[in-house]
Length: 133
Image 1: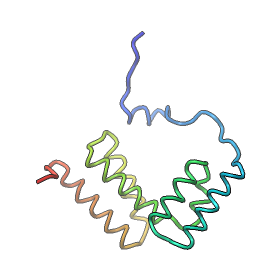
Image 2 (image 1 turned 120 degrees about the vertical axis):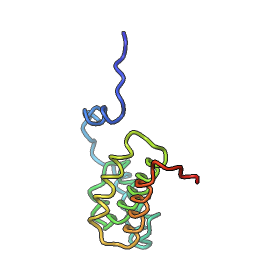
Image 3 (image 1 turned 90 degrees about the vertical axis):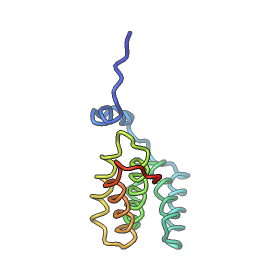
Image 4 (image 1 turned 30 degrees about the vertical axis):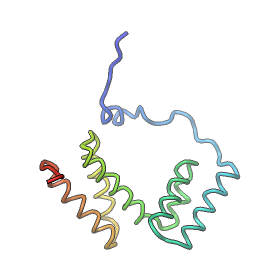
């Protein structure tokens, strides 16, 4: 038997990376973990606490509740940073990641988000040149 290997972009487009199982209800421990991260984020509204909240909510499958806490700025910043890394590594999904991140960032009026978006745009424009120069 010879496997048919596809690149990541094609596999993603075909929907083969989605979990076929239904999500299980959140356990009390999972709910408590997300609630704790929300409380921490409400005290310290910075990218680090937003990242903790996003990662906890993602792992337990509760992004809806986390998103209601006003973390869109931080999510956009995280997406921009990840898109930047994809560009630097010249991965097959770099263009898609950059376009998606820039579209989402354009919806947020924040000077920090705008600054990072501009850096990503500049990196994308110069991706054909040697970054180390």
